[in-house]
Length: 532
Picture 1 (cartoon, rainbow, N blue to C red):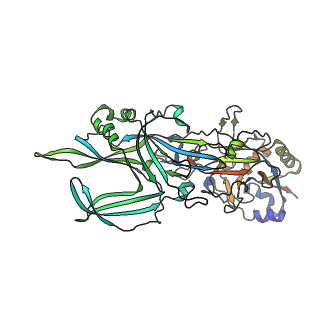
Picture 2: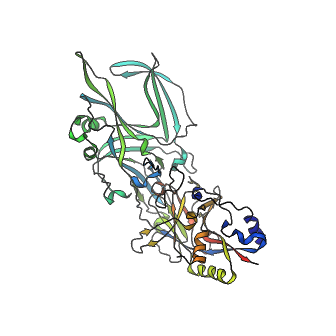
Picture 3: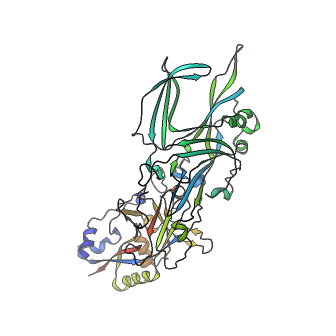
């Protein structure tokens, strides 16, 4: 074993501060104790210790307002946002449905729609990320199109792209165990004021009232780019980037918007969001898949005409006006755990740890990990009596081969770990204040193994964390494992321990916990060195 450790140490990396975003680059033994092995000055030992790992029930609720739907932070304040829509059901976690609530803004306040404005059509446009190098393009089609009052010969070219499978989770064509289930997307008027200053609107289990149905359409997992040109002079009639386009109820927008032209309701954003409180996007299904999209790329386009009098000649030219998705944005998540494995597991209390661990984003369960005090005592004894120095410490966690074969895996390293300052026994509210010591020191957080196999496993790097407890007498805090990634800034550094993708992380997994009869139980693997 000593030879193995020495050989591993010969391949040590150079630690670079700020490298916490880099995964799969942590050695078997890190550089914190490398000097002990120089010129054969020490012998290496490998020991594993059982951990107390337990499920944390978040009661299917999470902060999911705009401040938590951030996927990239721009220091100028123009950040990137991500939301989730869809539904997915499976036996371990039950049913999960994601809807999206948002206020709208007029692209121009107090806009004058002219004389006798009339809506022609209203279209909602959503632009999920597409696979641009996988295109279906049957070629342009010649047809006649009514433009104003004139039938015009045009050429229509439609290109179709699949939505990026890395942005989808569940029963998708590219994922094992399912087909690309069509989703019936619904848009409804929201009649409850979305008050971003109220705590009730900051969490994913928020309830709002809805009014008129504004539209329903089938989403087949693909987006389309459309180009329409006149045959006569090849001039452009219409062009749209790849997206999902959905017709909305034009009568509603006639009454709600155009009929209010130059009235107080449209004067500014404050008046408008109380007049037209927002929309809710949801799906009819309870099973299918979840997909990510960017609210920044959404818009509602109104096509309308108004009366023009040019030297006594009355015409009705067509114009467009855009409503943008801005202001209050909220992820609304619904769960049905009935009959699921998590429903049963969440009802038990195992002081020595849970045999199976359930991890899910978007308000689903988290995992808590505690290093037993007797383990800390043993390591301190080794340190004091044998001058043993910890060279590497890792928490190894295996997926549960019996219940979770990773067939729905989407991302390889979509987990976070943080130290718990306090956990309220009655409310289960967790207080956090910082990264783990290893990340603050610039070391990588995690590496993964055998992701194409069942089981696979992950190693969380906790070397400095454990050394600080054993060698410096710091507090032995429980650790919190969540689904999601830490959010970076445009400068490619982490924005802070509070900023993760957990509010829109669609993944979930079942892991082996503190099951003493299972060889793959969660453990703390320590490499320590003692002087010869």
